[in-house]
Image (cartoon, rainbow, N blue to C red):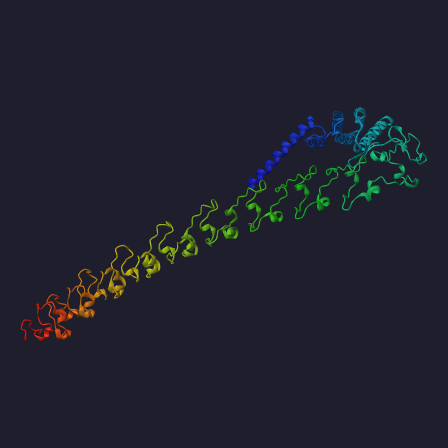
Length: 596
């Protein structure tokens, strides 16, 4: 901050010196004329240069030189639109020259009067060159001619002394001869008997209150009403007090106005000793304006071209003026934490200098939806906001789902992300079933199993180390309903009972059917296709046993077989008895037949 103040002071000093040098050059060279864009700067520099001349005679000579330059300007600008400005500046330069002559020592007045007389001749000659003037310039022209003629008469009647030239404020009061008006032409409408002074007398010259400008052309009765002359006020306020608006400057009218043109106001703040700007301009400032003196920003040359210098006025409480300038949810500290007075928009916030650690107080609205609720500093830094790296450990972030719930795909594990992922490499996930306490495999892997797969838990066959190398433990899984899984594995016309009736879980191919354990008594349901043509239609168990299929012995009684011909019709020879076999044969010895 100190470096900034020193730099600002150096810059101001440099600009001041540059302005002084430039102004002195302009004041010396006088290259511009009224109406030129740089002329106001040159004019100001000329007045300042005159003010800086300590010797009063030297100052008078310099002011006469400036008045002579304005006379030349009028001659050059004759016939142009700028002639009105040239007339105004010629009149003001003549006033300044007369005032400077009046301030000179008595012994130098003779020499200065001669130079003033020569100047007046050149001015009159320059004015005579002017062609027909617009109406708005006629009054100024007439007043200037009146002023010149009055001075010329005064110089011919008496020598110029400090007692014959009166100064009121910044306006020079010049005497006129009698009431004869300009060049001895009588002013119509005035009764000569109202003026009791003989021609050429001090009263006729009106030296006690010299008449200049508009005072020289008005009727005497405008001031001397009812034939009264003595006691008439010589102060502007005495006549013009009703003309002042409310809250008007309380000083003398002559501080701003001149008798030449009442409306042509030029207030010289320096001559009036006016430095309390607010006393006059308080109502000119808008709402919420800076409460200090106007001179902190404005100058008397150009009111609108304001430039506020924060350092000289000691303006440190930025918010007192700029509170309304900041947008919603803006940093509540001083503007100087980010902004500077040279470039308001080029803001850089120094978080460290401000001790700003509560990031959310400013940046809460900057984060997207479902963003981490902790402090921004857990991921971001003040150098590069976008390059955020989240430090889960420093932030104490263990509830992964609070941030990453939306990142997981459909049907993803519902537990914490840390069960599989790490903060170094999100994609390289390894699920620790034990750490996660994950025993309900189907909740995650249900969509991974093929059609008609075992409906139980995956852990009955698979392990978390090698998913493909599965070994099903029927006992551990409590699986007894073999058909629920292996129904599609059996061939056509296979036994419909449980697989465990023949097969075991150790060797599927080495099957041994336990008819008793299976309660299988309906032999034909399985072996119907095994019997040869014209075979006994009854149960296989009538002849065969489950130990030796080939060693068959038919128990006719047990089978209730009495219709012998149904089986043995093709066993008898031709022309054999057509009766039942049992009429001759028995089931013990087929060959030992009885009967015919």
